Image (cartoon, rainbow, N blue to C red; front, side):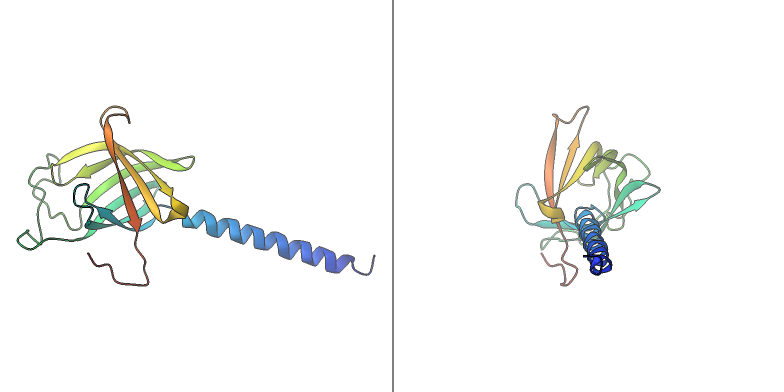
Length: 161
């Protein structure tokens, strides 16, 4: 038995390293960091691509692309915004900011709806193994709001409407 002890230790170390690597990969899959396709509540069509990144322990999100219908302005501005984003281009606009990790979700931040210019409190949570993002915007407390489900962009193919 003593002859096999180094082999058993090597096997144990290799197994533990594999488990740690698998757990790390799984944790990364549920991270909200990345690119997401937002979906229109009414038509259920893709609406925009939002890139989320972490900066200083907080999540931020910027609109990278809009999916516009024929006759819609391909490069709209936020004419209904009331803060520094008023009359700024929607493409490139930061609409998600200030979210901090709270267990499995990110909360305490704000999300802007460029269509009506209103900013809401929000929280987000990765679901379905990180393939979808539950985004809840609300006024006051989370019962008064709406939830959207964003889809993670498959980076191996071009995003199309």
